[in-house]
Image 1: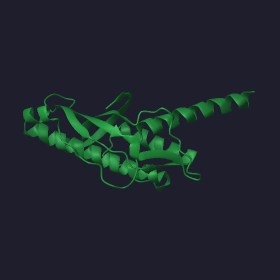
Image 2 (image 1 turned 120 degrees about the vertical axis):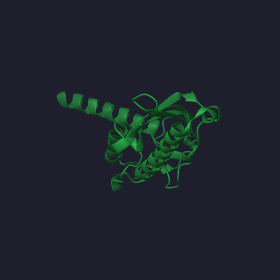
Image 3 (image 1 turned 90 degrees about the vertical axis):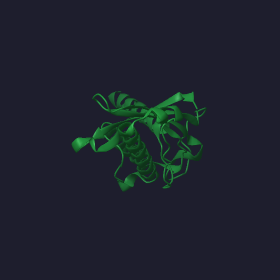
Image 4 (image 1 turned 180 degrees about the vertical axis):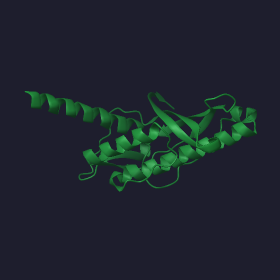
Length: 188
């Protein structure tokens, strides 16, 4: 009876982790993610420091998506994640480890349309918020050995993704993505 309970709990954990992978996975081919800009109304109000922070945050977002997509296509390759800070780096590493355990990979590439929606470089903690219309029509998670599609039925393929970038390192020189949240019920 105890073994059945462990198997049931383990199965539930695997299902939840797979759903997290499917819901948040911005992976696919090795093409570069497009880097967008601040929204037009925000761009007009940004000073030089804010614009520099926004540019660095968008670069980090693009770098993260590029390496995450490459890692998802080959999760056993142990590809270093660029653009990811804490806690996103740890979460992503766990998702990729789960893919290896489940024998899944990603095929194809999602489309991104990131925009900076808020910049704070006046008071600490500094941050840049990015919103992305994530279009998953070009990507899917499959079982590596069989090619079986693991996409959940009736799942939105275009939805909002929110990201937060923060400065890291000496003198806040490097901006990295600290969190990404998929708003799976918010189409874009």
